[in-house]
Length: 138
Image 1 (spheres, rainbow, N blue to C red):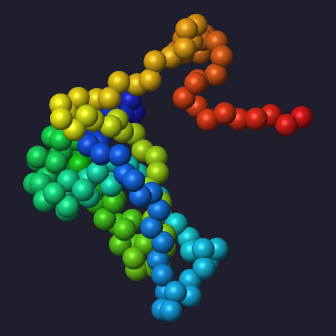
Image 2 (cartoon, one colour):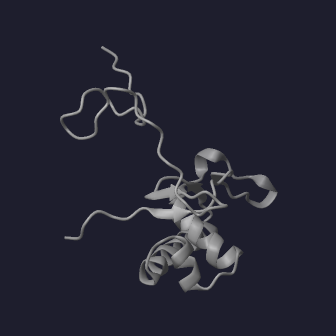
């Protein structure tokens, strides 16, 4: 079993997070469309290799990952996009294991500061302030 996965460095924050197919005469309805989830780091691999036309070594270095890892990420992204196009599925950009990089300096954006008294780990008190709030109905 390997260690913890390294976060992939992403150079932009996507503005559009959902792409939906249209049929002949725009007859497809939202309820009829299934989705493929494209992770943010998969979108970044497409942006670097296909849109910016970087070679694989340069793109991998930009994401701070090995070339073999980059190849696996972009292959998965291409497969998901091809499946969505061929089968008429929507593409939702969501999730992944990444950190947004500052474009000018190529350094990670620091995580938000934790409130006083909040500690990481199982012995810390309170809920993670970055986690979505879950209401309890009772």
